[in-house]
Length: 557
Image (cartoon, rainbow, N blue to C red; front, side, top):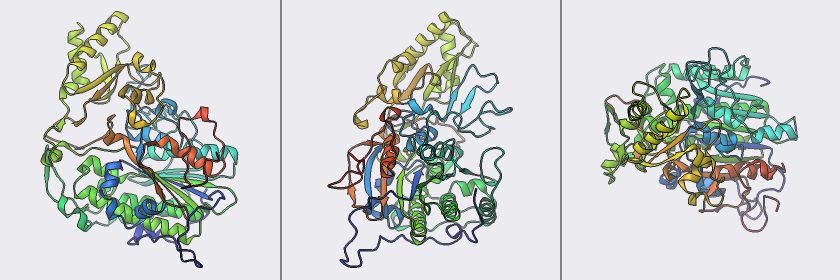
């Protein structure tokens, strides 16, 4: 547990400073050119939710803080892939520190359906213990129950019980999937502050963090200034009843949703992470420790406002600044740390702004493809009018046939569903469970996989649906409606949602950039190699990436 309360959370209360590059060699005045051969004492694994490769590249020329440090001094893989088809938050986070795709982690989606469940709510949330009395997919007991494989932190702790494993995030599923079931500390943001699993006591440091959070929340935020690179994006876009594109994140006092959907959230999470590192003295003992940090604001902002307005532009600028301040604080503590930064998935801007910006073919999904409408239409065609025959979470992804169907009825429902869906102009592909199961697990460059191979990488025979519905590119899977909550989303098998940056940094390493495709499942074995932790290749899907430019091989080959 945390040992004592720090007196201040500097990152949560002060204006961040811009990160500085590592100092040159005092004798030669030349920058360091290679990382030390000894293992780092701390692994810092950062996931920026919905930080697509497109968003990363769009603002790269403007980075001056933490993102500049990573991109100008580290190993840069701008074409990383969340290689599976189900590009959602929970599956994506499950790949980052396990080295395994969702087909192995078992985390196939944010929500799937268990039609055999002995409760009225058949939906299962990925980080839920549905065996807990009273739990359901909206009001649940958070748990790592469904993660089928160990995380890097779990493997480190198994090899050396002295290892400390900490995970903090804006979302429970980010903290849980990156920390794993054996983490020492797992915390995520709620309206009450940072919380953990049911029954976990709040240690003094977390109480102090939550006190600072409450103080910040009680104060109004007048909004952020518009950086020069964001000025051209400052014009309104209408999406249903909502107008987006010109926001500055002004917030009334006490507005938690306004806090959560703003750069304030990530600043608070980074402040918490920095205080935890200092308080627990992570990275200052003989063993290597690990902290995973889930920065969730970019995702909330992308959903609420899209990815190409002032809101997203301000968020990336603030993220860069806050990361710079966070790294500076670790530097001052003298910690030998290695950083990896990536994302759980990408994202796609709202079609209304795309249509204004030279993409008139962009559209929203037809309401006829929503599970309720599909079930009604297919039941009628199958001679089962009035019965619910299809279950699903949205107008794309896994669809489940009702368990009450006879074998004959099921065959008829499947035939009618395939016929209807394959004739729809917005549908790219529909795969049956048998098709996906018969497909070998994909290998080779992730950018060359077929849609069926991407689907296989997301497939779990116990949890996946009877059909997988994939929409065409440039079809937003949020239908048109008069009153919209979210205006944009992700989850498709297309590169806008699959491609993410993967960045490694350690003081003294030689910078290089590799533009060819790699996978997020490659992160875990690459970090494991740096600390000399053996990971059997047959237990994971990823491969070790050599992080030493030129001669030498960090993978030990």
